[in-house]
Image (tube, rainbow, N blue to C red):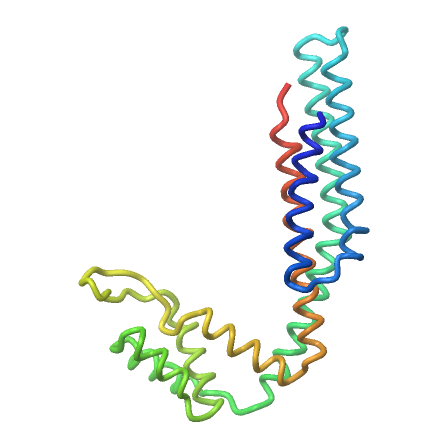
Length: 219
Protein backbone atom coordinates (compact mmCIF):
# COMPACT_ATOMS: atom_id res chain seq x y z
CA UNK A 1 0.00 0.00 0.00
CA UNK A 2 2.85 2.39 -0.78
CA UNK A 3 0.41 4.34 -2.95
CA UNK A 4 -1.74 5.06 0.14
CA UNK A 5 1.18 6.46 2.11
CA UNK A 6 2.46 8.36 -0.92
CA UNK A 7 -0.93 10.04 -1.33
CA UNK A 8 -0.89 11.12 2.31
CA UNK A 9 2.72 12.37 2.09
CA UNK A 10 1.90 14.41 -1.01
CA UNK A 11 -1.02 16.10 0.76
CA UNK A 12 1.16 16.74 3.83
CA UNK A 13 3.91 18.31 1.73
CA UNK A 14 1.43 20.61 -0.02
CA UNK A 15 -0.16 21.67 3.26
CA UNK A 16 3.20 22.35 4.91
CA UNK A 17 4.49 24.30 1.92
CA UNK A 18 1.37 26.46 1.96
CA UNK A 19 1.73 27.06 5.70
CA UNK A 20 5.34 28.13 5.23
CA UNK A 21 4.34 30.38 2.34
CA UNK A 22 1.91 32.33 4.53
CA UNK A 23 4.45 32.66 7.32
CA UNK A 24 3.37 29.90 9.70
CA UNK A 25 6.06 28.16 11.78
CA UNK A 26 5.86 24.45 10.93
CA UNK A 27 8.06 22.93 13.65
CA UNK A 28 5.13 22.20 15.98
CA UNK A 29 2.99 21.13 13.03
CA UNK A 30 5.49 18.52 11.93
CA UNK A 31 5.45 16.99 15.41
CA UNK A 32 1.65 16.89 15.47
CA UNK A 33 1.48 15.31 12.00
CA UNK A 34 3.70 12.34 12.85
CA UNK A 35 0.81 10.54 14.57
CA UNK A 36 -1.70 10.54 11.67
CA UNK A 37 1.06 9.47 9.27
CA UNK A 38 1.94 6.57 11.57
CA UNK A 39 -1.75 5.59 11.68
CA UNK A 40 -1.98 5.60 7.88
CA UNK A 41 1.29 3.67 7.62
CA UNK A 42 0.11 1.00 10.08
CA UNK A 43 -3.20 0.72 8.25
CA UNK A 44 -1.43 0.29 4.92
CA UNK A 45 0.75 -2.48 6.39
CA UNK A 46 -2.31 -4.24 7.81
CA UNK A 47 -4.10 -4.06 4.47
CA UNK A 48 -1.08 -5.57 2.70
CA UNK A 49 -1.07 -8.44 5.22
CA UNK A 50 -4.80 -9.05 4.74
CA UNK A 51 -4.47 -9.11 0.97
CA UNK A 52 -1.49 -11.47 1.13
CA UNK A 53 -3.17 -13.96 3.48
CA UNK A 54 -4.12 -16.88 1.19
CA UNK A 55 -5.98 -18.62 4.02
CA UNK A 56 -8.69 -15.96 4.14
CA UNK A 57 -11.98 -16.40 2.34
CA UNK A 58 -13.43 -13.44 0.45
CA UNK A 59 -15.80 -12.74 3.32
CA UNK A 60 -13.00 -13.13 5.86
CA UNK A 61 -10.87 -10.66 3.94
CA UNK A 62 -13.72 -8.13 3.88
CA UNK A 63 -14.33 -8.60 7.61
CA UNK A 64 -10.69 -8.03 8.49
CA UNK A 65 -10.50 -5.02 6.17
CA UNK A 66 -13.55 -3.49 7.83
CA UNK A 67 -11.98 -4.05 11.23
CA UNK A 68 -8.70 -2.44 10.11
CA UNK A 69 -10.66 0.57 8.87
CA UNK A 70 -12.50 0.82 12.19
CA UNK A 71 -9.27 0.73 14.17
CA UNK A 72 -7.58 3.32 11.97
CA UNK A 73 -10.62 5.62 12.02
CA UNK A 74 -10.79 5.36 15.81
CA UNK A 75 -7.12 6.28 16.11
CA UNK A 76 -7.58 9.27 13.80
CA UNK A 77 -10.61 10.41 15.80
CA UNK A 78 -8.59 10.31 19.03
CA UNK A 79 -5.78 12.28 17.40
CA UNK A 80 -8.33 14.83 16.14
CA UNK A 81 -9.80 15.17 19.65
CA UNK A 82 -6.39 15.69 21.21
CA UNK A 83 -5.00 18.20 18.71
CA UNK A 84 -7.77 19.81 16.63
CA UNK A 85 -10.55 20.00 19.21
CA UNK A 86 -8.10 21.46 21.71
CA UNK A 87 -7.24 24.16 19.16
CA UNK A 88 -10.96 24.82 18.61
CA UNK A 89 -11.33 25.58 22.30
CA UNK A 90 -8.27 27.85 22.40
CA UNK A 91 -9.38 29.73 19.29
CA UNK A 92 -12.89 30.20 20.69
CA UNK A 93 -11.44 31.67 23.89
CA UNK A 94 -9.24 34.15 22.01
CA UNK A 95 -12.11 35.10 19.68
CA UNK A 96 -14.37 35.81 22.64
CA UNK A 97 -11.67 37.92 24.28
CA UNK A 98 -11.21 40.02 21.16
CA UNK A 99 -14.96 40.34 20.58
CA UNK A 100 -15.40 41.64 24.12
CA UNK A 101 -12.79 44.30 23.49
CA UNK A 102 -14.56 45.42 20.33
CA UNK A 103 -17.88 45.50 22.17
CA UNK A 104 -16.57 48.07 24.65
CA UNK A 105 -17.45 50.95 22.31
CA UNK A 106 -20.85 52.37 21.29
CA UNK A 107 -23.18 49.76 19.79
CA UNK A 108 -26.05 50.33 17.31
CA UNK A 109 -29.62 49.91 18.51
CA UNK A 110 -32.01 47.33 16.98
CA UNK A 111 -34.00 50.20 15.45
CA UNK A 112 -30.89 51.58 13.74
CA UNK A 113 -30.07 48.15 12.35
CA UNK A 114 -33.60 47.53 11.05
CA UNK A 115 -33.73 51.00 9.47
CA UNK A 116 -30.48 50.32 7.64
CA UNK A 117 -31.72 46.95 6.39
CA UNK A 118 -34.71 48.66 4.80
CA UNK A 119 -32.71 51.45 3.22
CA UNK A 120 -29.82 49.30 2.02
CA UNK A 121 -32.15 46.97 0.15
CA UNK A 122 -33.01 49.86 -2.17
CA UNK A 123 -29.36 50.36 -3.21
CA UNK A 124 -27.06 48.41 -5.50
CA UNK A 125 -23.88 46.65 -4.31
CA UNK A 126 -21.56 49.49 -5.32
CA UNK A 127 -23.60 52.05 -3.41
CA UNK A 128 -23.71 49.86 -0.29
CA UNK A 129 -19.96 49.29 -0.34
CA UNK A 130 -19.37 53.00 -0.79
CA UNK A 131 -21.52 53.77 2.26
CA UNK A 132 -19.70 51.13 4.30
CA UNK A 133 -16.26 52.42 3.31
CA UNK A 134 -17.21 56.04 4.08
CA UNK A 135 -19.00 55.39 7.39
CA UNK A 136 -18.50 58.53 9.52
CA UNK A 137 -17.92 56.65 12.79
CA UNK A 138 -17.52 53.16 14.26
CA UNK A 139 -21.11 53.00 15.49
CA UNK A 140 -22.39 53.49 11.93
CA UNK A 141 -20.01 50.89 10.53
CA UNK A 142 -21.07 48.38 13.18
CA UNK A 143 -24.70 49.12 12.34
CA UNK A 144 -24.01 48.40 8.66
CA UNK A 145 -22.33 45.12 9.56
CA UNK A 146 -25.19 44.14 11.85
CA UNK A 147 -27.72 45.03 9.15
CA UNK A 148 -25.95 42.82 6.62
CA UNK A 149 -25.79 39.92 9.08
CA UNK A 150 -29.43 40.39 10.11
CA UNK A 151 -30.70 40.44 6.51
CA UNK A 152 -28.64 37.43 5.37
CA UNK A 153 -28.82 36.62 1.67
CA UNK A 154 -31.23 38.95 -0.13
CA UNK A 155 -32.59 38.80 -3.70
CA UNK A 156 -31.19 41.50 -5.98
CA UNK A 157 -31.51 42.61 -9.57
CA UNK A 158 -28.19 42.10 -11.38
CA UNK A 159 -26.72 44.51 -13.93
CA UNK A 160 -27.77 42.18 -16.76
CA UNK A 161 -31.38 42.34 -15.59
CA UNK A 162 -31.43 38.89 -14.02
CA UNK A 163 -32.04 38.02 -10.38
CA UNK A 164 -29.43 36.83 -7.90
CA UNK A 165 -28.60 36.59 -4.21
CA UNK A 166 -26.02 38.59 -2.27
CA UNK A 167 -25.23 40.07 1.11
CA UNK A 168 -26.11 43.69 1.74
CA UNK A 169 -22.40 44.32 2.41
CA UNK A 170 -19.70 42.09 0.92
CA UNK A 171 -18.54 39.59 3.56
CA UNK A 172 -14.87 39.75 2.55
CA UNK A 173 -14.89 43.53 2.93
CA UNK A 174 -16.43 43.26 6.39
CA UNK A 175 -13.88 40.60 7.39
CA UNK A 176 -10.97 42.81 6.35
CA UNK A 177 -12.30 45.73 8.39
CA UNK A 178 -12.94 43.51 11.40
CA UNK A 179 -9.45 42.05 11.22
CA UNK A 180 -8.02 45.57 11.14
CA UNK A 181 -10.04 46.51 14.22
CA UNK A 182 -8.90 43.38 16.02
CA UNK A 183 -5.26 44.13 15.23
CA UNK A 184 -5.69 47.64 16.59
CA UNK A 185 -7.48 46.42 19.73
CA UNK A 186 -4.99 43.67 20.63
CA UNK A 187 -2.18 43.04 18.12
CA UNK A 188 -0.54 40.20 20.05
CA UNK A 189 -3.73 38.22 20.63
CA UNK A 190 -4.74 38.74 17.00
CA UNK A 191 -1.40 37.38 15.75
CA UNK A 192 -1.76 34.35 18.03
CA UNK A 193 -5.32 33.78 16.85
CA UNK A 194 -4.35 33.84 13.17
CA UNK A 195 -1.42 31.50 13.82
CA UNK A 196 -3.68 29.00 15.57
CA UNK A 197 -6.32 29.24 12.83
CA UNK A 198 -3.72 28.46 10.14
CA UNK A 199 -2.35 25.58 12.19
CA UNK A 200 -5.85 24.20 12.71
CA UNK A 201 -6.49 24.43 8.97
CA UNK A 202 -3.49 22.22 8.22
CA UNK A 203 -4.37 19.67 10.89
CA UNK A 204 -8.00 19.50 9.77
CA UNK A 205 -7.00 19.15 6.14
CA UNK A 206 -4.60 16.29 6.73
CA UNK A 207 -6.86 14.57 9.22
CA UNK A 208 -9.66 14.66 6.66
CA UNK A 209 -7.34 13.38 3.94
CA UNK A 210 -6.20 10.48 6.14
CA UNK A 211 -9.81 9.50 6.89
CA UNK A 212 -10.69 9.58 3.20
CA UNK A 213 -7.70 7.42 2.25
CA UNK A 214 -8.62 4.84 4.89
CA UNK A 215 -12.33 4.86 3.99
CA UNK A 216 -11.79 4.45 0.26
CA UNK A 217 -9.56 1.37 0.43
CA UNK A 218 -11.25 -1.66 -1.09
CA UNK A 219 -10.36 -5.32 -1.08
